[in-house]
Length: 311
Image (cartoon, rainbow, N blue to C red):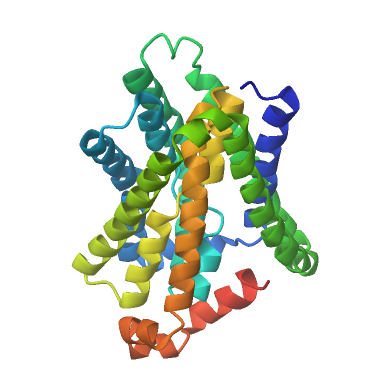
């Protein structure tokens, strides 16, 4: 089913608003933290920028889905760190400061990596004929326009009008959740035939990829001997993809609605898993996993909570 021109225009605008809101929660300290805590930040960046695409390739090779789903999985794997990761890390008692830093830094890096991975996915899985209308310059420029200027504008707004920005943050966060859910609904509804005929398979694939992504982040963090709170945060940052960006790429930049359906499924699955993680980490089981150090919120984390996580 073809989608309207209005939908193709509105969806990128929604992402731009989300990025504006994220920018309003950032300061230069979030970028400088890479020099203060280089190990966890470096591991997180490598996992999200390189690890996830490699996981996507391995996942597709092992599972062997149809070409459209395979391409969709690769596009989703190129979009790490959703807008909700900071909130999930905080409520789950992870390292909120690390989460904010990874989200902010990767937002600038992925504008360069997403177009090339998307081009690879379209050509490799859908064939050269499907890629005839693919323009990497157009995709790159589109992603840059809906990402970089809004983030920088948000940071400038926070710097010039800190009180107003702080008051707006809760509403922007709530609006972000609503918009992302609506976007998933649009992606699934726009090609409902595929949805109805492949509901069970897509759900199973989304769950398998989500668990694999969470496991990848947690395992690498554990092997790197990071504190448990940072291991949890890496699991969240790697496990929660930027499904909204993947849907926008499919709908607005590629005009291939079918490529956005899997991301819509994944979004619902990752939200459910996020809810489960947030619940478990605030029970006695979560306290045992996180250890006694989780009972005291570090000063840096406390500042992040006051600055970024008020809802």
